Length: 66
Image (cartoon, rainbow, N blue to C red; front, side, top):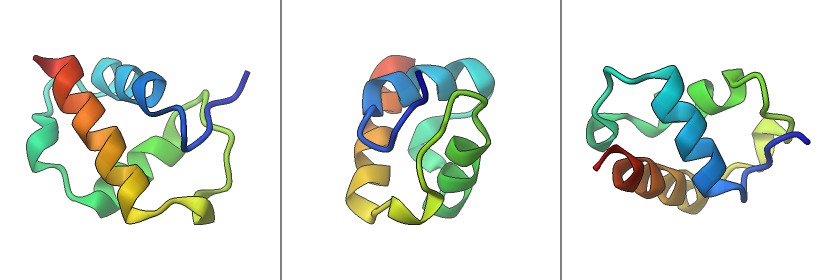
């Protein structure tokens, strides 16, 4: 099952596994967008992202990192 933009927690988990050395607090949204789209399990339309979705994913990733 492919990840969609609204799968914030699952995307955060995948990002933490793909980028364990990164502090998600300091990731720019442009980089975050690119990293999400590059995830093997990601299957949503890259153009459907919004600032709100990216922020929710970043917050979930920060929570996952703690």
